[in-house]
Image (cartoon, rainbow, N blue to C red):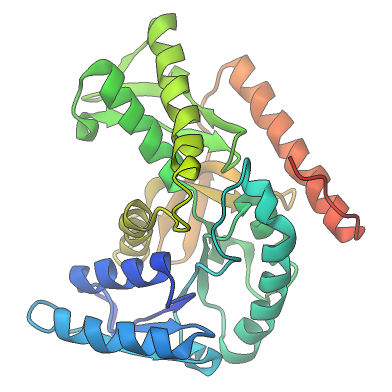
Length: 309
């Protein structure tokens, strides 16, 4: 473990921020976890509760406070965003969340020096593309959190194939949203490549597509904190332990667009973007989605109000 490693969580009072902090504390991977939120009293209450809950199994120091707590951060997890609401698309969060990102980026620039940023603010790919112009951080040290899409693809495959999820390797690329691209051409069970029947493929797609609408219909006002916290900590572990494993993430390519790809994650953030062979159809879909993200980014830069689906 790297010594004196500090992780700061922006939005530390919220569901995603707090659950991620506790899962990370359980892993005992870092020296300090700082919960930063405008609701300082709630972040402080999480801090007080969490440091007691983790006392017997973790040596991690839990702290909380305002944006000045960003100082000396090695990794920043950005979970900030407007309150969860019932929406048809993550695009409905764009206008409000971009304003928030503009505000917090100044604090990141003021208080930190070259941290790795893991961003979970929706619509992820557009926000993450825009964020690179707001923070003074190299692109390889910026990771967009889209791992949940790949996990849910594997989860759906597990249901359809009646196979333990830990035996399944698969990827989702493209947008963290309705234009995500499950890579059906690269599915492996116990390291053996398989092909799904068309009926199986359609059932998997149905499960994936229905998940978001079913979750939204609950109108719970909360995000998927448990799954997200587990997967965020997987990324942090890859950074801290320098595993250089492939973790599907929204990362910024040479063209400046952030989109879900096969990212090799290590101590420097995105160590490389791996080229995974795709079918012609998957490649065309990937390029179409990238163009969509690029067009939305241009609209923001031009100050045009976006159409909300």
